[in-house]
Image 1 (cartoon, rainbow, N blue to C red):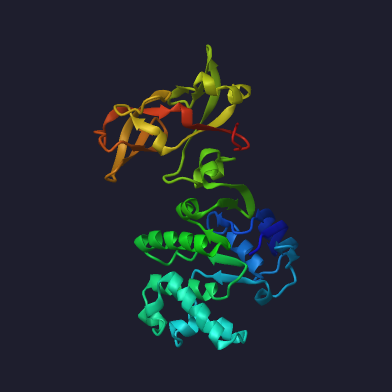
Image 2 (tube, rainbow, N blue to C red):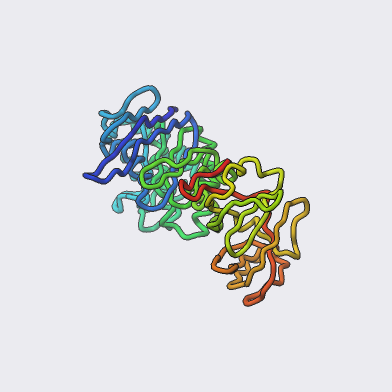
Length: 366
């Protein structure tokens, strides 16, 4: 078992900075997820840790050992790739055992490790099959099993579920989480899917353009995003944003978007008072916008006039795509809602759950 540390790590490709001054400390046995849009540098950071890319500056430590100049095979890590990378002519058993045979591990030990990994992953009956005889989910289990038999200090996963269908991705998310609980080993997992990140991680590192935006627990990222990018990236559907101004209206502090005005509850105004008169970006999540006929109790609700543009009936909830002046936004409302396309109505904003960002820096105002 081992911790992992990125210290001021840079990776440059010519004039392009793929990883920009990355500083992360991953605790022993932690499940850290690196998340961000395509091209943000998350896979490059993982490949630098694996030794598949040479870093331009900084240090990477596994445990207390600096591994900048250590060959990949000597870093005591195992990596699961997006493509399963199985040898088509070898059986499942031989695919899983291949790396151990190269290291001249005794046959009895190989057999023990492969059988134990197969039992853990529920693929005991597949050991004699060839990869072409397996489904996508089974191939992914074999790829994970090949990593498990290495008994490494750190597991690295590079978007391992992206080739699977939606239903299987959900099942494999749960399998990987249970695997982490059983193995009690450090996991570092790369994905562009924020739902994977939210459901699996101990902590999440949100990366954009090579720069670490925020490192925190899933719930804290959701509740307290540091900036506009994190707020928009974490959560599905994404947070709604409205450019506007903070201004005084008598004794009240209000958000004025030009199309609607909503008052900030008096109990929440203190962090924002210094920004009165300034440009801001007002953020509210779809689940905090309610049909005016189904407002939850004990919230500070502000009503906003809207027109319903699109409805998506999900069974347990309804997604409403709404228009208010020049603003379009999304709400997740009670399934009993009777709002339908083309209807003029009101929705209620839960003002206890708002986010306000500086209009210039895009940093959260706290």
